[in-house]
Length: 76
Image (cartoon, rainbow, N blue to C red; front, side, top):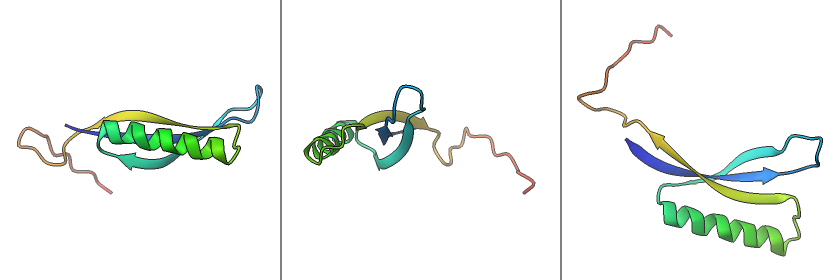
C-alpha cells in the first residue's frame, strides 16, 4: 500500500449552489502537503479570493505489483 495526499481547491459560490472541487497538487509527504495547502491558503487570502480554500485529503493506493496481488485480465 502507498499513501499520498491530494491538495484540493474548493470554491464556494453560495448556499444554494454546490461547491467546485479540483485537484490542485499531489504530494506524497503528509507534512509537506499540509505546508503547501497552508501556503495556497495564504496566497488566496493575499489575492483576496474570499470563496476559495485548500484542503489536504489523504489517500491510500494499492501497490502496483506485489506477489500477493491478484492479476485480473480486463477484456478491453
